[in-house]
Length: 262
Image (cartoon, rainbow, N blue to C red; front, side, top):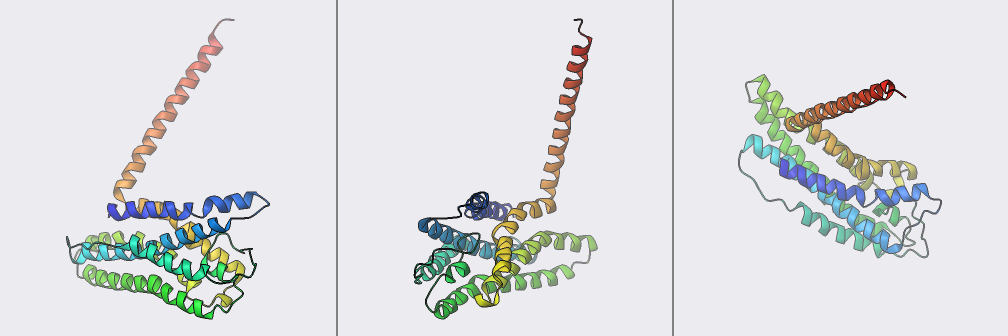
């Protein structure tokens, strides 16, 4: 579990860093621009890390299935390699479309649906190809997740102890929240025709799988983890102790200052 959470934390840190700093810079300035090279780099990194997160969440669900139904039998995951391979394919197809001088991307960051709207050519063939890749990256992991949790539910329901069932389901709760947020918004954005999505609504949806969900992941998993709860309690006690010491020093200094003869 900690191995996967470490990978997920590193992944989310890189995922948000690829878009948020430049987006905040554009928000704070009147000149909202990005170089073509920067746009290409952002697209490749964003697609690679987004696809990697899809596959990593699927592997994490399988890990929970193995931990509950087939203890101590694990497989090696190739999420990172597959994610970057998907990025190379989708980026190449998107960037090869003619833009005919169109240079303004109406979006917070460089993303496939936004870049396709700049093309002056017929985008139906490329949309079909990208749809196929999106099915592989989004629907197949979701299907594997649902199958894994189906087996998990069957195994947990066979546990006689109510406490045992509660603990088993509790280990999957955090992951299901993340899966629902990330895959729900990603599927809405990528598995429907671009013309059927409102321009402004598409921007809002992209913020969920691109920024909000990766930012919430550490909080969601931390609040469900016993060790992290204990660490937070110790940190809270340490902070409270340090604050009290500073207050006592401040009061002592104030008393000494007031009582010192002039």
